[in-house]
Image 1 (cartoon, rainbow, N blue to C red):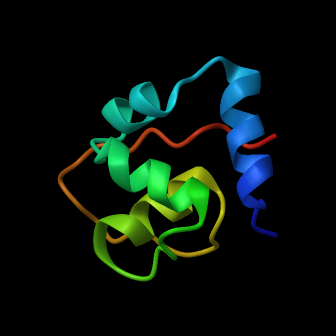
Image 2 (cartoon, rainbow, N blue to C red; image 1 turned 45 degrees about the horizontal axis):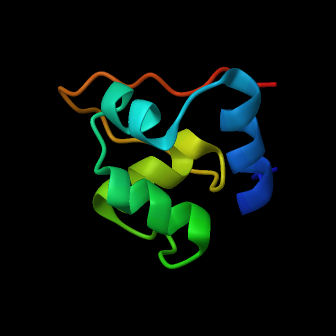
Image 3 (spheres, helix red, strand yellow; image 1 turned 120 degrees about the vertical axis):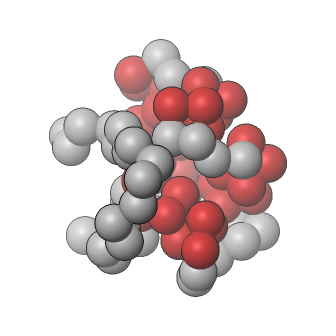
Length: 75
């Protein structure tokens, strides 16, 4: 089950990871991650979909890509 936006933000806070650090680790645009967690984006396609899945706010599959992903470990 996907996390709510508040749960995803809390998960980052519990691990002591800032949005900027999460973005750097996962090669994401920090503004995009902020927009997702604020509900301004839905994460339907491309980088926003990838970010939403890595944040845990959306269930989905990530396409094979040359970029390494470092999603947060499951609770």
